[in-house]
Length: 362
Image (tube, rainbow, N blue to C red):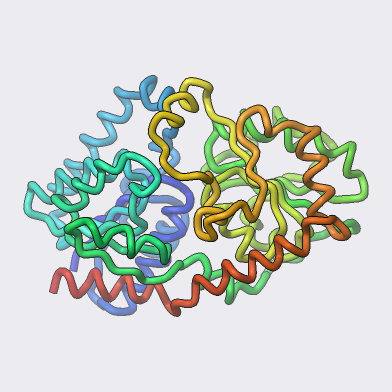
């Protein structure tokens, strides 16, 4: 069968690659076309456009890139019509993918949405679009099942693929260091690097007893990091999990990385800096109390959240001392992680997703 997949960012590329592998295990004749990244391209042929050409996030950034977004949407729609897939699989990235879901459904294609739009956090009206244009919604957070019961959409909780992957992760690379490590994960978009990384790097002089390692994101070039780096930090690529495996603590840009860090049992500070206009708009619509997935899943502040001006060197220094070894908050955070891990006990979630998608189109 033929599968058209749209993944708009690095995390979607990771999920997409694993999903493709699972589909091929259950469908020997599977063929793909997709918008994705390097991991998906390594899994099977069919890459049409790399996500780094399409990665736009934030209200202001969207407004200043409307022509590019329109062109990308048009290109994606034409590719679907040309390929005539048995199913269109949409991975996260709701601003773009909900439009593709509508187009696909209205043109007679089956649609599956893998990693649901976070309509429980904001833009709840998007749930109406899920009802109308999505045949199968695959959920990865346990609390989502209760939420989606009020909407007329076929939703299945499959478990969290990240939890499953990290639980079985075995490091294949040795991280050369003579000091304990603090991992720095500044995000997967260029605007996040610009806003987050200078503050992270400025911590170097206060933590000379540590090796500060910046984990480079897929789809961002080394040259994009260089303006913000100095001799107090080390930059590595394709080693994020290897670094987290041995890190004593981490400073993380809010997003999927906060959950990954927690699954590795690494105490962390979670921060975010957005364009000031984007923040004002977000405050008008966001309905949840927390920005990090860790805190959302536990429904309390298990990890510190530092938003906008709170994400500054002095505050981070103070809070980081509290979560490194000997810190007063470290033990409690690790206990909270233990509770978090017990929420994600589903086995082989990606296999479940693949089988559900195949059943949809058989």
